[in-house]
Amino acid sequence: MYEDVRIEQEAFAGRSRIFAIASAGCTALALSGNHKVVACDINPVQLAYARRRIDGGGIETGDAERGMSVARMGMPLIGWSEGKVKEFLGLSKEEEQLGYWRANLDTWRFRTCFDLMMSRAVLRLVYSPELLGSLPEGFGPVLRGRLERGFGRHSNLENPYLQSLFLGKGSGAPVRAKGEIELVEDDAASYLEGCEAGSFDGFTISNILDGAPRSYRERLVRAIRFAASEGAMVVHRSFGEPPQMSGNRAADDRALLWGLVAVVDAQSGL
Image (tube, rainbow, N blue to C red; front, top):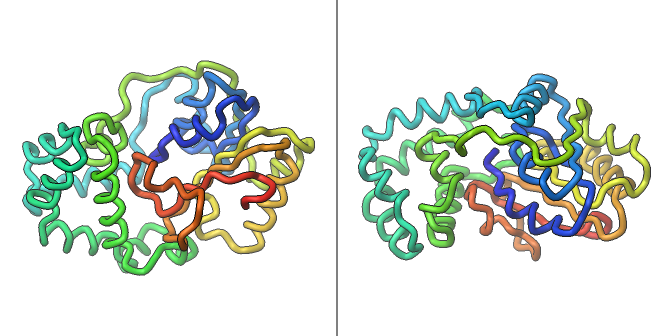
């Protein structure tokens, strides 16, 4: 999961029961040491994978990762030698990282190929029109800007998400859950509507609202407010490029890909 769990760990510090989108299980695993976690996913295949991860299984290669692997094979064609990439990833000072990026990797060939890959014409081969509608115009240049923002803010050497993005390396040995994780196969709104009021102290819902119709967004917000305890916090992400807002932690997320990482009060911030 390209979602920096440090955001959730800070937002949910001192809180007990957390609702999470299961996805690949990474966030649920990381939170399980200090929280009781309910990990929900509507996709049974995805949920089965999360269960294997929670039971100590390793990271598996999915469709998105296979696509990224193909893209990495083209690195020499844009002037990215393995030596250059590894040297860049070994840097730890932000100013030096930006200088190296601009001088050695942010080439016209990279920009041209990356913007083509991130164009709507290519992305529509994989993603739904609804999801594409949530992306900003000129997504390639926007995403390149987010990467550069991250290089100027976070140490490459200490960034596991960057190592995975550029080299395809996983996060190391399999990790077992340190505490209780309940897996639920259901739609997020449907599950929360059936819970008791005030059941959860925190919610991390990934970017499930990207491409969702307004009616579903409104329904999920109502369900979260119903299931939220007093002072509960919500973390939600989006690939969209939102207007300026307080509480946007996108620049703090070491995955570097998000336009919005909102950390808000469940009752008043959604």
